[in-house]
Every structure is written in C-alpha cells, then in structure tokens.
Length: 292
Image (cartoon, rainbow, N blue to C red; front, side, top):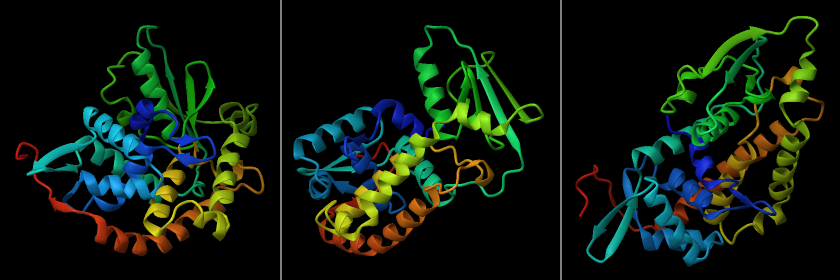
C-alpha cells in the first residue's frame, strides 16, 4: 500500500507557517490535476513555469523534482534536449489515495453504527521507521492515540492495507468493539483527538479561502490558485478522523470548509485547465523501460 500518509512520513508538514503549501505539496497537486488520468508526461520547463506561478522559486522547484525522482515519485524521459516527467506506480497510488479522500469521503461521518476499531502495537525500539510509518498511516486512516501503543478509530477500518509492507506480524493486534457502560464515549474522543487543533485547521482554511479578496491574493491566476487550494485542503484534512456527527461539538467547521473547498475547486478547475493547456508541453506517457 502506498498512500498520502507514506508521502507525509518523508515530507513532514506540507504547510509552511501562514498556511503556504510547500513545493512538493504543490507539485503533487499539479500532477493530480494535470497528469493523473491524462496519459502524458510533462516537460520540466512547463512544470517550473507552473510552480513559479504558484510562488515556488526555480531553485526550490528543481530541488523538489530531483528529490521526488530519487524517491521513486517521478519518472524522467529525455526527448532531444528536453526532459519530461511522468508518474510512477508509487506516485499514482499516492494521488489516487488523495483524490479518494478529497472527493469520496465526507468530512463528517453521518452513518456511524457505534463500532470502534482498536489497534495495539508493540515493536522493538530499533523499529523506528516502521513505527513512524504506521503512526502516519493510522492518522491518515482516522485513528487517534488513546494511550501508549493503543489507537482507536470511530468506524470499521480494514487495517490490512495499513500494515502492508511493514513486517509487523506478531507485533500488532486489532479488534472491533462497542463502548459499554461505564465508558463515556465523549471522554474517549477528548483523549484520542485534539479537537480544537483540528477545528483550527478548518477555521484557518475558511479564513484563507472564504474571502474573495483574500483568495485572489493567494496566487496571480486560476491555475496557481487551484493548485494552492488543493494542496491546502489536503493538508487541512490530513489528521481529521472524520468523527461521527453525534460526537462533534456544535459549530464544527469541517463541513462548511468542505463545501467551500469543493465549490472553489469546481469554479477554478475549468479556467485552470485552459491556462495549463496553453503552457504545458507534453508527450504521450510510455511504459517504464521505453524511456529515451
């Protein structure tokens, strides 16, 4: 399994102070919008121009492209003097995972049946990488840390993909359960998740994109604004467990922020594609092994 969570373990927090997406987050947003599903590779020069419109310096953009290629997130093809970049299986899986989270899962769970998934793990101290990757995947899947080594999610979660490739058999135990008296579900939520911090992410998104003037100031044109919007939203929802409506405090800002994102993305998408069509130098994608 390769997910946005795996990307996060390598990149860290994808927002700079003030809510500005980092170069790799913007590049992934570009690839998801203009490469995924289009069967093309894009000239490096085109990518540099697009990222420049979104506020990324040429030096930072080139460094990001090189780093992503080293991590098997980009595939390079040379045609004469030009270099084109395309997706790898790993980056395609990351982009599909992000698209599913953005467009197919709601910010709030309206259909919860009271089932919790519990996952406990105990690993050797030397397994720092496995522990870090698993924690990142658990956060992305909606788990919160209830106590040391015990994680909980307010839904039925297929945990097999979360453990894929980690070699943790024998070190992880998974259960599904329902809360019984004297357990207070509200206390579980307060212990496992920092609701105020999650809410602050949504409020920040609403502040940045809810005012037309502020949104327009994010970037000079629809293409750049669309990339910044998508990268910002993915970061905003990264650690939201999608709690059931009945477990959330009144005035929870997730759904208003989601409505704002989806409306703004739809509004910007056509103009962004028109601008991209006049910028992007592309070639048909080719299977790995046929690169020049």
